[in-house]
Length: 311
Image 1 (cartoon, helix red, strand yellow):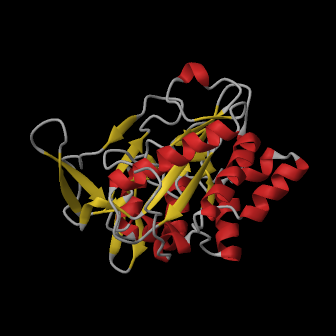
Image 2 (cartoon, rainbow, N blue to C red; image 1 turned 45 degrees about the horizontal axis):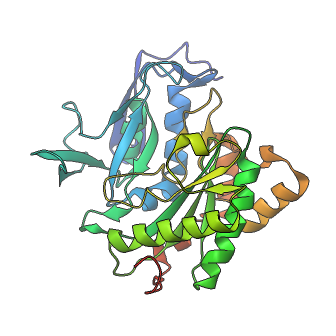
């Protein structure tokens, strides 16, 4: 860990020309052996890759002011102390009156400020602010039940990939940074949440029927033991999924929710080595410098759902 003993209790971290972000308690460990300053440094370095995936989307922050072993809370409404240069966007509440004023992580300064207030995780919506009813993608969250792990999720991911290819849809995997995987299907075409949710539910149920000993699509936790739960329910305008390149705070070691190539998943399965699917911040940054953004197609690739599935 870096030595911050010579630094003041509060730093002004420069993140661009004339742009500083105040950082209190820089040496405070939010993970054991990993400080708030290191978290902010990771996000600043990853900014060119992460911001395109957060830009113009409402974002929920998961904050850990006392570290990952302390109490966490969701920050949806921009707090009262939010600087005036942080862009926000009002979204009407679903079940009550009023609005939620979501933070928009559109630039490196905002990303760094969020990290400075101990927002370890970034969870964007599947839609952008210009059209709150139109998802730009479908997401499947592969969640391992008791007795299974990320390698079992990888096995299910290939079954899902093959099913989607039958509909002429390309998909892109990423590790969650926790126990499982997420599979994204970029659309970037006119579509509704009703259509994407129905398609995701129907395809998940089809895979469960094909492989009932391995896969479950039911929300009931009682049915998940020894199986991989394909969570299709994220495809709604009220739910978020952890963003690509976000740190995760599920364990005492900081891992990144990182895109992987299908060949990498295949290799990890072949050698039965789940450690190949976990990336700490330094390794994630080296990987980005080498491979670039494997999730860039998710931003641009236009695909259409088949009309006869899930209707």
